[in-house]
Image 1 (tube, rainbow, N blue to C red):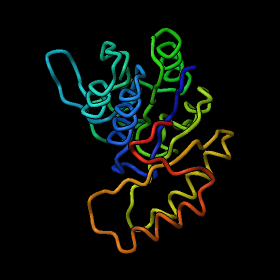
Image 2 (cartoon, rainbow, N blue to C red):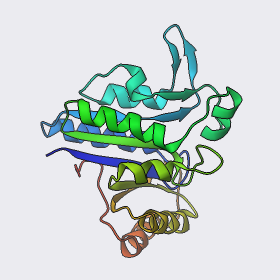
Image 3 (spheres, rainbow, N blue to C red):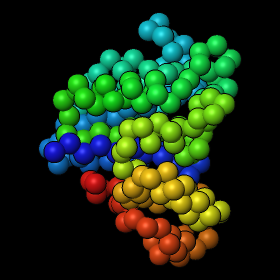
Image 4 (tube, helix red, strand yellow):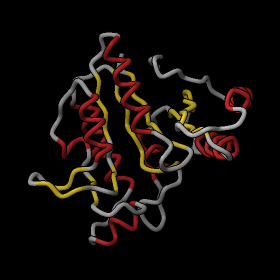
Length: 209
């Protein structure tokens, strides 16, 4: 049975791609075929093959299923700004239905055991004036993995995000405490607090969901 998760973060820069790649590699080590998708990405370099986003390339490299880049990251924008603003700058409207339809098509037609769909930024990042990436996750109806960047303020951000995920009718399947490499006072105690308050198990990066 295929396992598919939507992966989000408490904020931008909390290590979503790092965590997604680690989960994909763990699944691969357990003999599973894997697929990583980054449907929307803002911040890309121009190459001879077109725009390429670093996070999408990392997900692609960590996947056993090597799909064309356009299927991994169909909505790619050059400027590293909020997706709805990046789309507006190049007159390319985004909407949740189109994004979800693309992802669902790949999920329905590709051959894999384990897939991670990585969002952009946090849970409520807009894709246009009325919709956010949460609307994409709702259309896909996937369980959610939350990446918590361990820094001051992360408890509040994590609890609010978990509350929003549940309010949107989705299941928080688990969460990852991602060490950002910066000293955090009482790191173990903060993780313990999150374990107490978050309504889902903590996932170790060597543990496949």
